[in-house]
Image (cartoon, rainbow, N blue to C red; front, side, top):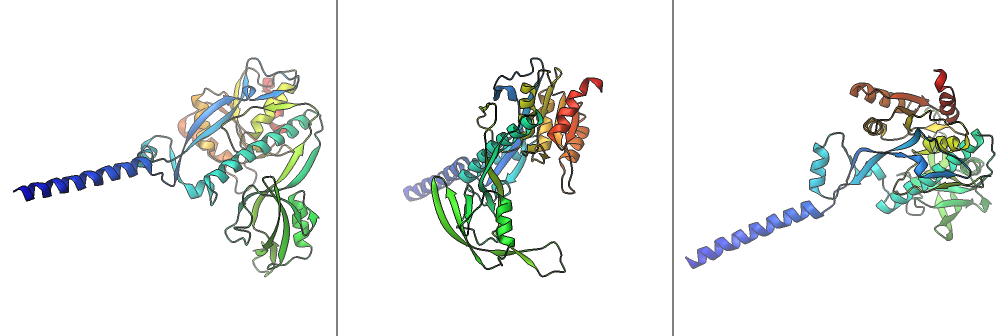
Length: 352
């Protein structure tokens, strides 16, 4: 009898320990997923100050965010699967082969470049020239088939190739197409943090658009953007924190333009929007636009600027109009493909 009782107690203890282990796994083991939800709508005047500029007193320009959080445990994942307006994405869909730290650094870099581009675009739209100095090619990510994998890393800045200075992507493409072949080695000068490195990378062959041709273009296999510095004639100060990525570019530029304009561009409206911007003022596509229009509706936004669909693969305009129609939103949605278009719309708003 004593033996049987102890055996039962032992089995109970094992079951109890297994349950505790399973609960600990569910609570403390992070899973390779992210949750995406409609985020916040935030006044850009709180984050951007233009020297001797004045924001609209009645209306406001606002950026829109998508709330993204890493799934910390199984309970968070279950919440994501059940909560309304919540999307669960695999980590590989979100950050590719980047580590969490690399992905965060990339978003921060994109935000900084977005701010610089917004300054250039807005000041030049106001008739003020902004000198640009290109300083290299920023590595965003590396193609799966690239021979540079493990040699170059996201965050690297390429500033030299075969002993020739590289200030932007056009410099690199000209060098590659001037006599390089797939399989050749290119010697790169790379700024990584505060270290200047010399690295050798084998080129691979990128197939051309003509499927009948066997020609392959020599390429490193990188997703990049030009790195540049600006010296604006007036100071523009940004104090954005805990927001990353390039999608606030258009709204930054509109706020800067508003602070420079004696007339108030907002006309007393709560105006939100999204879209990347380059130094020439072109507005580009972004992710999460359906979430952003939901956030805008919840915040009582009157007018929303979205990127226009220009290329066959673009979908922001279609997606936002579809989401607003599906939900019965009464927000004026204005697709634009340049900053000038957005400013022109606002300058003529009272006549509409």
